[in-house]
Image (tube, rainbow, N blue to C red; front, side, top):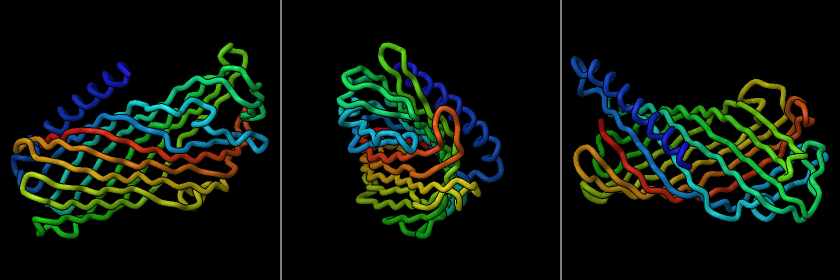
Length: 281
């Protein structure tokens, strides 16, 4: 967690510095057209449900019941936003998501054709960070009480899933980088000039082959939906409390890649509680 926090703060500092440089160069002629924000949040994630199968002959493994994902895990998230003419918003987001657990297997379990015996210790790593680029178009720019924007998202996932026996004799993993487009929605309701509520969602359900042009017969889905309560601390800073559902997964056969046969079935449902701030640049 310490390394993750240091990396987060370093990237955030560099990103803010770059945005300030961009803002200064643009502000000379068009300062009224652009607004910048840096958003950061920290909290915990609870795994409501998470199951995975690696290989056609593999076990449909329950991470919560057998893999040690029955406790809370720390989480971070940050994004940079730019408004153009109050109607267009561009967003860059980074979400690290790494869950490492150890547990004793209740039953013999097979991943990628490799059998892990019952009553033996196992180390499981589920590393699924993603990068997201989004565009939103504001539909109620002149409404001071209620805002609503719709748009598109492109998400890049960078997945590493591994299982290792605690004695080090057995190991298997799956790695994948993928691009997934999705729809995006954001609404905001101002209770008062200082307090507000915001709902935001990115999601899609579709065959992967139609989305990225591949021949893989995989059906995938993502849904990242949050409900946020915020307050303006000063003209430059907002603080907020956020409740988030993060779910999705995929099922089907992709390209065979050692040590597996290409079949993956992976569905997850996470609940996240976090607090954060918005810095207006």
